[in-house]
Amino acid sequence: MQAACLERLRKADKMKRVLLKLSGEALAGDKKTGFDEATVVTVAKQVKKLVDDGIQVGIVIGGGNFWRGRTSETIDRTKADQIGMLATVMNCIYVSEIFRSEGMMTNILTPFTCGTFTKLFSKDRANKYFNHNMVIFFAGGTGHPYFSTDTAAVLRAVEIEADGILLAKAVDGVYDSDPKLNPDAVRYDQLSIDEVIAKKLAVVDLSASIMCMEHKMPMYVFSLNEPDSIVKAISGNFNGTVITV
Image: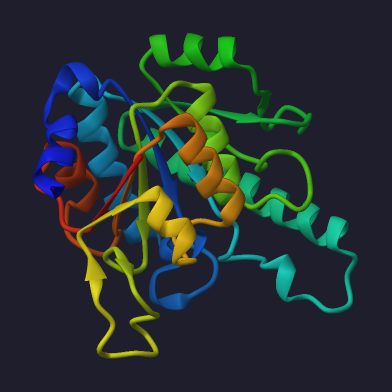
């Protein structure tokens, strides 16, 4: 079943544009906070291979390496989420510059005005940049509180009509329980989005899962720590969990 799903990835005519979701924690490496430049450079080199192969890449980055507002018990939720949005802007500015150092053209789009740091998001602007072979960073989440970067990633993927979402995480797929807590946790090779919702599996949050289901957006979940994991996902040599729709 997984092989059939991955056939979509192997066909270049069907994989022209992807949305890559990176967790902030994964970019922090072993430090767990801030940036691990070696990790970010490794990601940049992989994305460069995709761009050189003619694949258009949009990127959403979480802000967990700086801030996780939902763990705060004293700050108003709206303000906490706004801090998280700004954390994703910082992440995108940094990672964008590393990408540029590896020879790629980039641009950062946000759903709110951010001075001269970014440009306002619109689908037309995103398509214009894609047509100029740019990697586009979608920062700032949805621009509203109470929505995670998971939801922002799916929203942008739907808006730009991506062929799929690549979820690069700290673990190598979706498990029936937390593999950090349960050494006997079993990894799924393939799941439907309906199963993800029914089993309450922590792939993306519920609103993001429902949006994937409604818009038939497949997801490919894999570990960022595995060598060439992003390139392998695109090439079809996939080690992770395929979430079908």
